Each structure stands twice: as C-alpha cells, then as structure tokens.
Image 1 (cartoon, helix red, strand yellow):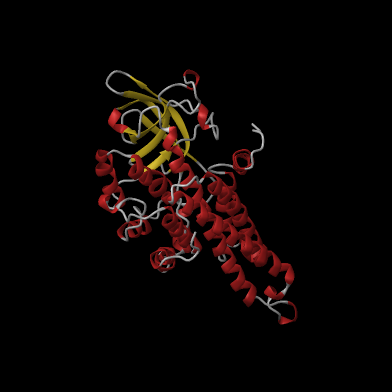
Image 2: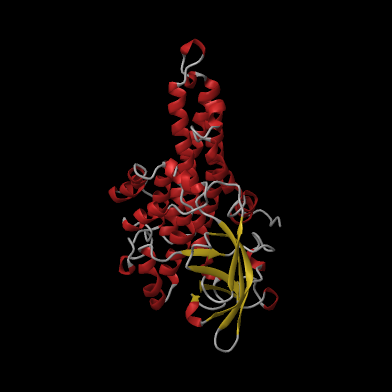
Length: 387
C-alpha cells in the first residue's frame, strides 16, 4: 500500500477546500436545521462530476474507486460539510449498479444519476430486524408475471426525495432456506410506483438528510428490476455495506479534523491567566493532541480499508475496524474541542456543539459499536460467537 496520494487523489481530497469557499459550514447548517437537501451544493457536485465518482466513464461517471470516494467525503467533511446523501446515493447505490447491474440497468439509471437528474436511496433496515439482516421479513413473491413486494423499511435516508430505492428483500422466507444467506434479492424499486408509501421519522440531529419509514403494499416488480441474480443477493450485499462503513469512517475523520482545527485556532487566540494562550496549558493541549492522534490513526485505517476494497481483497476486517476507530475518534475530537471552547462551544456563533450529534450518531448507526466489535471478535480474532 502506497501512503502517498497521487496528484488526482490529492485534487479530489482538496475539492472540499475549493467548494467550501462558496458552500461553507454556515450554508450547510442552514439546510441541516430544516432537514432539506442543500440543492445548490449538490448541483455543483454533480456538475463537477463527483456524484458518479465510482461509476465507469462509459456510463457518465469518473471511473474512480473506493479510495477516491473516501477522499472526496473526507475533504468535504474536513470543511464541516458532511453529506450523508453521498453515502446512500453515490456509494451504496450507483456503485453497486455499476458493479452488478445489467447493461440495460446501467444505461437506464447511471448517466442520469451521475448528472443529478435522478436519485437513489438504499432500503435494508426493518423495525423488527434491526442489525439482524438475516431475519428481514420484506418479501417479493412470484405471482406469475413477476413479483409483488410487501413489507416495511425504517430509517431510510432521503426516501422522500429519492426517485428509486435499492431494496433488500427476501424472495424466499427465512424458514424455507437451507442456508440463512439464501433467498435474498436486491430490487430497483420506483418510489413513485403504486403501493409505495412513506412517513417521516422526526430526528433531533441537525442534518440536511431526513429519515423515513417506507411501506410496500403489493408493489409490482419484474425480473428486470432485480439487481444481480434472484435469490442470491446476499453475495453482493457486502459490496455496498463495506463501502458504507468506509465512507462513514472518512466522514468522522473529516468532522474530527474540522473540530480540532477550530479548537487549535481558538486555543492560540484566547488568552486568560497571565495573558497566556489557553493552548499552552497541558489540560487543554493534551486532550487535543490525543484526539488528533486518534483521528489520524482512524484515517489510516480508513484508507487501508478502501485500498483493500479497490484491490478486491477481503475488506470486512478493515472496514469494521475503521468504522469503530473513526466513530470513537470523531466523538473524542469534538468533545475535546468543545471543552477547549468552554461556554462558547455551546453557542451558535462558534458552532462546535452542532458537530456532536452527527459524530455521536455514527457510533450507533448504521451498524452500532457493539455489533462492529462482535464482528471483530468473532470474524477477525477467532473468538466464539457471542449472540
């Protein structure tokens, strides 16, 4: 693994510096507080060719890999503009269609999506299954002409503004398969189709993205709507779940850097006892130094996970460790920065406390810390299964 970024990768990382000059943290917060997509920023990202970063050039994308996608998110988040919509649309959906879609599917969806004309969401989580994907109950049953999809999904990001959803469903019930990973199928579902309905889930976290419950009632699908082989969808599922963990790790790393950069500037300027900058006191300096070290270590693990994925190596080990390390490091970085600002950290003017809900969320979602540690303990270290 080469630790030196290429000139193109450096340009992708630094794109966040460039775009934030026009669409900065204050702009992002103006949409986050309304739970509305930052349409001007997203239009700019699409125009600059970054929505389809992992889509081949033949279908309107940039033909880059997971490393470049992680660097893109990292660069935006370094400037306080973490875009979760890039996770479900660009990383989890468009990249998966590019990898496993038919030629017809690629031609139909990818060019328009790369231009920002259509948008995807990703639907896997269910109210009664949570992290236990094996026991999801949404099912697409054959009806002679195709399939009819029934079920419910929850915490589906931007389901209201998505034109299509990649829906993880069963085509064979859990109790009718010999292996628990059999009988899964991913479908491309038109969110305007008859039988699709949704209700908003109010959340307390300021973010432009909104969360939804989505209901499917006899939604008609065909074989052409299946992504990959029917009943064998689990084989391709981790081509989207590992990238999800990688890009969210990049988000945490960037937000942590943003918080620490603001804290360092404040600690160098703010003077109290004996007119000495507060950054000179070890009670503030050491927590910031520890947080910086943790952030940079998490960044390295994130890059290693992205490198493994791009080289078609098993990436689950590194993706999960990156997710754990980055979520914890992000929380510690924001907390240390908040302590540095004192009472000012809780004001809108300084905008530090506003960072905390986002990083704290990512300790819990999309895969909670405990399940990440279970994976590392069992799959990586060889310990007995704990659940």
